Every structure is written in structure tokens, then in C-alpha cells.
Length: 156
Image 1 (cartoon, rainbow, N blue to C red):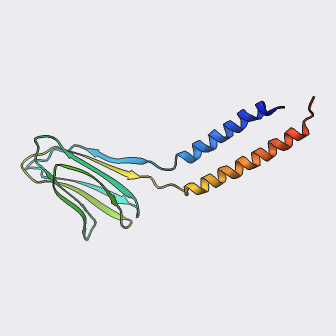
Image 2 (image 1 turned 180 degrees about the vertical axis):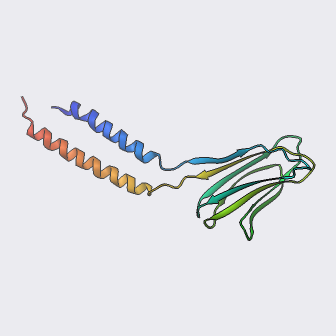
Image 3 (image 1 turned 135 degrees about the horizontal axis):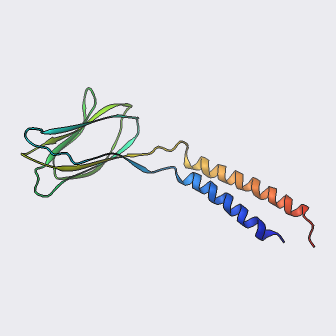
């Protein structure tokens, strides 16, 4: 039988389709900074327009020997997230509504050089089950096509 000839073709098709569905979810770095905060320059602000439901990963680490910092997230009217006297923070914040936000890092002592890293969860364009269903349909059609092709080929 010609099954050996069909298997690599189906395998290539499967690998191509799986590679399309596997790039659905990941984390993208939207900010990485190490500002020098002093009494002359006591804060650093970062501005972002964010979509509703986006998940922001917040990582802040104050280097050893530096003073702590305060971290807030604000929109035009309210303070939505606040952590005071930080030496270390590893947290997740979900954006409540599509808006412009200010991420503010403020000195809580005399001098500090914190490392701040903000990441954003990528929102898939369509749910994972849709891509799985599409994959199954394509594989079923390919198998039916190749099975009919095998039946039409004479066996010697």
C-alpha cells in the first residue's frame, strides 16, 4: 500500500496547522526601565492607553541598599492601584476599562534605583476551541480525500 507516501504529507499538514494554533497566548513586555530617583527627581511616570480586560504583570525590584518606592496606577479621575514602601513587587492587575492610565513610581526615601518591568497578556484573536475545531475539520477532509485517492489507485 501507499500509506508511507501519505503519512509525511498528513504530518506536514498537521504540523503547519498546530503551529498556527500554538501562537495564541503569550506575554509581551510593554516597559522595562531602571530610573534613578533622587530628591531632585522624586518620581517617574509612564503613560499607556490600554484595552479593557488586558492583564498587566507588574514586577518591581529595588536594588539592595536603595530606599523603597511607592507605585500607583491612575486614570484621569481615580487611583486604581496603590502599593506603598515597596522593596519588591510581583503582581497582576486587570485593566477595568479602555482608558489612558498613568503608572507612577515615586521615591519613598532619599535615593533609589528600582527596576520596573511591565508585561501585557496578549489577547487571542479567536478562542482556542475554534482553532482546534478548525484543525479537526481540515484533518478529516484531508483524510477522506487521501482515502478516496488510495481506493482509486490499483494495487499491483
